[in-house]
Length: 328
Image (tube, rainbow, N blue to C red; front, side, top):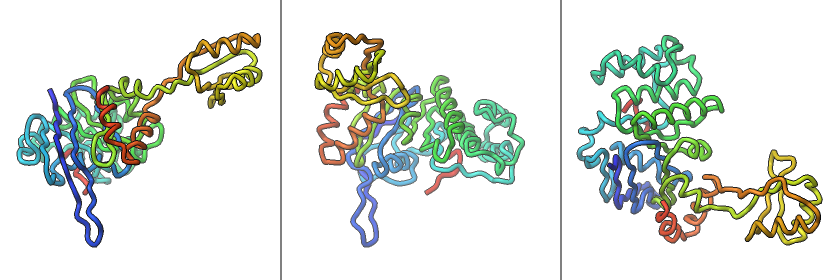
């Protein structure tokens, strides 16, 4: 079952004395129920506009949008009770405690008080629930924002850059929470530019460029399209090995943080690496392929989109694969 279906969506912003800005153009996107779905794209690619279209914060010029089987924005009031969202920075009363902030939101939506403690425990804030929010770290405020978005027990949770402004510890806290949510039946749409985090938490991803999706599918399928062809080589005599491999026509570069490892490029057949080294009396300790990461795939795809060849990239890659009140 699809929780989000967008077909042929267009949105252009009219600007005073400036050319119109085409934020979304011909956007097609499907998000199936369950797990964590990564929504990626460079700044200005249309991610936030897409989220605002889904939440009724802006209206599309054309196209159809459905969320939880209902047309958006016409039938949005019928599904908003099943959708939680955290867009941009969560807003709280800083002099109130985390518990009181959640209680005010719960009262406004007729949510049972018992749900407050459940959410505080879920986001691991029960120990600080009675402290004032102004004393919370950024990571704690983000987790409180997610708790607020989860108060109504949504089927779909939309998070727009939840890691913004967080330090490493805060990012780890939010990552662990999002992974957990994806395992307990909540569908999470995660918009983020932190590609390493996305690769760790997401089951599926879609990559946007210039207002449309240019690639989508499982993370593993997308990574398979970006196979580097390079290999990692380790051997006893590293300096001699690098010289031999360069003489054989390979490109050899040091691996960051690896004192005895080399990245060898231009490898059509790994057996040729073995042959070149053995003929020089050198023997391998390791020869393994270097897989592409999500960042390299993302950069390759969005670079294609930037130079006008996004349509070709979309055809091949698809085949494999305002400020918003807290708790809106």
